[in-house]
Image (cartoon, rainbow, N blue to C red; front, side, top):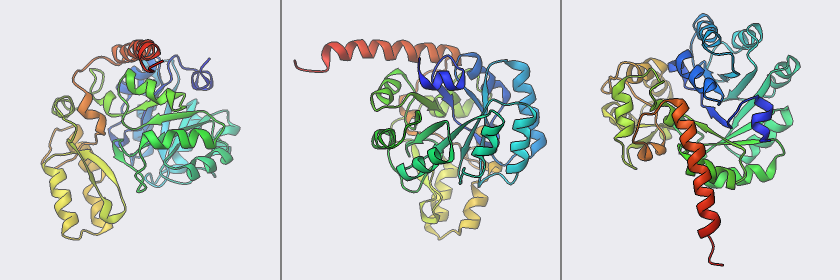
Length: 318
């Protein structure tokens, strides 16, 4: 049996990435009901708002789901840990910070811990801290990324070689071919973000979904390099505004303000691309439809199987 499925008690080795303040019970539960691991990203939300989403998610599904705690992003780390334990959330993913102080505390309470990493060094430290599963995320991914900007294709096999715990591939994956490629590189599962935005179950603005399904291969842009805060977003009027701010020498404080979750929600939930941004990964160029999450997972599994059969018969000359 796949180690990720066994450890997390899920049917398919497919995880939802944390989505910050646009996280919601509807999409999280749909992912878990479809056999993957739905995830509530806490972003900068206050504890009472996160608790409402947890309670609603538990009402919608009795399948396992996770809470993502971005350590250096949320001002409520301790409160989020308390919520996880109070509501017996079975899985926590930790990102954007040092997970070492939190992993043992969660593990002692029987919580499985996933740590998001962007380098071999980070992966080794997370394993030493006691992480059950690692997510290795290339900078093709949507949203906040590592300033090292390592690609998924090169990052996954290096981390797999360096650690003993299961590795999940993230960044640039949205179909069965990408899933199969991740497995070939040594991963035991995949994490999706942008692909899940473009589903019928995702309660985001239709204009956001249309941007993704209509995107070409060059429709995302990196902002924040000048201040050490790499973020991949869709190329929109607001994205162009952010790039102009950087050219003018924006400070880190101001950049953080302009890319706060207020502007994220304004883009993703209100469809206001002049005064708000939307995250998207480079996989957007491959996305053309809006299936349900259940249909997406079934299609991915079938496509991966078909592609594996094709490769077996055609990949090598002899």
